[in-house]
Image (cartoon, rainbow, N blue to C red; front, side, top):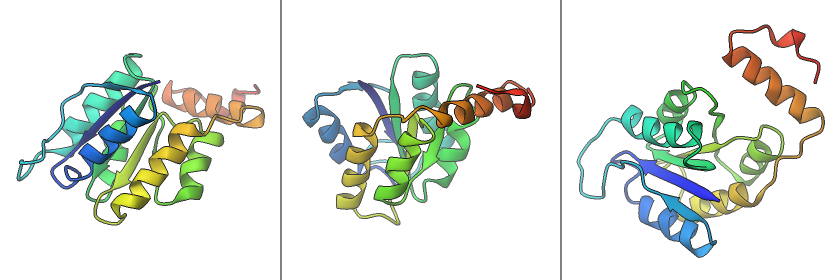
Length: 156
């Protein structure tokens, strides 16, 4: 899989760990703008845009975003068509974001999660398949909302 990763200044210490994880697990890293380890500040929407566009345009299969809380990155990424970004805080939410919601971007908190947990969450998220079945209809309803359509009209 092709994976795009970016971070703001608060997520910068985690970036090298995730970059290494992507390489260790045999995935391809897609280069997108990142804040960099020495930056004192940058704007998380800029970083979210890079990853979200890479996923939306098909240059990346999935994306990982890291900021202080993960909230801002998640909000910004979800504004891009075709993105299903999930804010994840533990093993279960990482698995469910993929299994039930087919999330294509995971958003993480550098401030609230330790680096070992972040690594574990990303491993779970990358390795969990979408379950399909009844969840496909639900994801299709999300796409309908994104397209300005009434989700109650989606039956499959």
